[in-house]
Image (tube, rainbow, N blue to C red; front, side, top):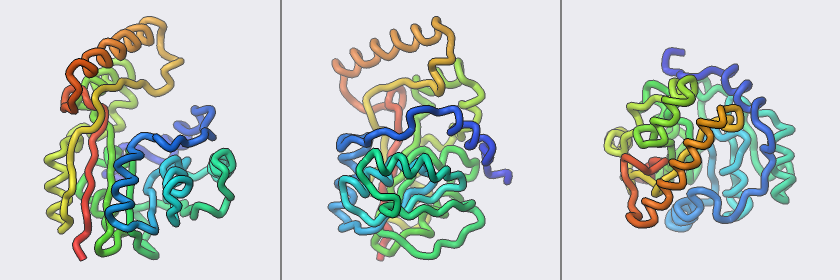
Length: 250
C-alpha cells in the first residue's frame, strides 16, 4: 500500500534482530504518569494498543492499572508475548491478541482507551491512520498517541548514522499543531498536543555502529542531559517525543 513506509517483512526482520525482549515492565515506564492520569480521568476499563508488539504498554496497562487490554498488530510472535507476560507475572490470557492488518480489519468492538506508541509515523497519510485509531474508540473514550520527534537533535542522529531507519518515518507528521488539527477535524476534543521529554538520543542496534559513532553519541547525550538539567523544558529542538491526547465527544 502506498500509505505504508514499512511492510511486514521489515517488522519481521526488525524484531528478529532484537534480543532480550522479555523484560520486566517497571511501574515508572515511559509515559506512565500520563497514562495513569488518562485512565483515572476517563474511568477507563478497556483499552487496545495498536501496533504494539511485543506488548509493553499492553502489559503496563494490565499489570499496574488492571485494565481489560487488547493488543493488535499485523506481526505478533506469540511465544515472545507469552514470555513477556510470564516475566511480568501475568497469564497468557491476561491480554487479548489480534494479529491482523489494520487496513483490512473492521473493529469488532470499541474501547475506552485507544493508544499507540510509535506507530503513526510509519504511514504517509497521517489523518488516515489517526482516523483508524478513532474507529476503535467508544463515545467518551480517550485517544492517546505518542511518536518520536525526529525534527529534534535525535532525528539528526538518525538521519546521519541510520538513514535507512530514518527513511521509514514520516517526518512531516512530527508536528503537534498538525496532529491537533487532524484530531479536532475528526470531532475529538484535544486535551494535549505537545513535545515530551527534556532530551534523549538513541540509535537502533547501536552495538553494530562504529566505536566513533557510539562515543560521539554518548558524549552528545551527556552534554544534552547536563544542558536540560540547567534549562529544563520541552522543545522542538531537543524533546525526543510528541504526545497527542484527546477525548471522543459523546
